[in-house]
Length: 225
Image 1: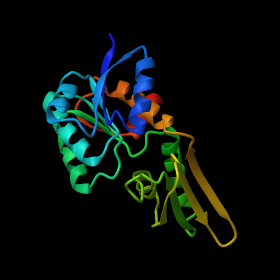
Image 2: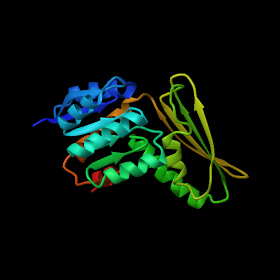
Image 3: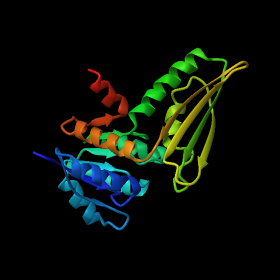
Image 4: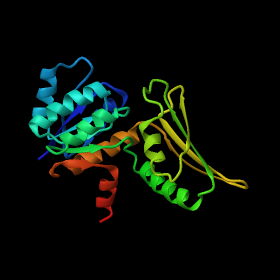
């Protein structure tokens, strides 16, 4: 039986790609989605009729729909960035009722990069560290959620720089600069498809999970077993 998927932010750049991927997936059925023009009735309809919701929208829509998802017991995949600490706490509270998967970046390679940064910061303790995040000019949050996530892996504070230009999907660059050499670790997305594919894989994975907060670390760890 196909699993029914609803997309929050279906008319957005990632939402459009999600639609294309889901419609080609033999295990999934796209039942529709919401946009900036959607009403509370639309939110309820999509949450009630979906086996899982995938959200790549904006903070206000995320918080409206996740509240409805909690009422209907619908698993929720959240890829929206720029969510405030206050609302993240609300999301954690909602996860006591439904399974919620939150990630600032759905690329598996970025999470492997995070593991490398953690190890490098332990070994290269005397090096200065900088993180540059490059994104398209319409991205609202700066620094990005991904750069903040990567910075949390480090043993010391990093210099942060955000570039918003053109149609750059996403590029993360981390430099460890010492007196005599420099190590650079970077990740570049060639498009938004990598994030959409990651979200769809996580959506399949979370169906049937018990209530709680899940992350890419949980997903990757499960795949390695």
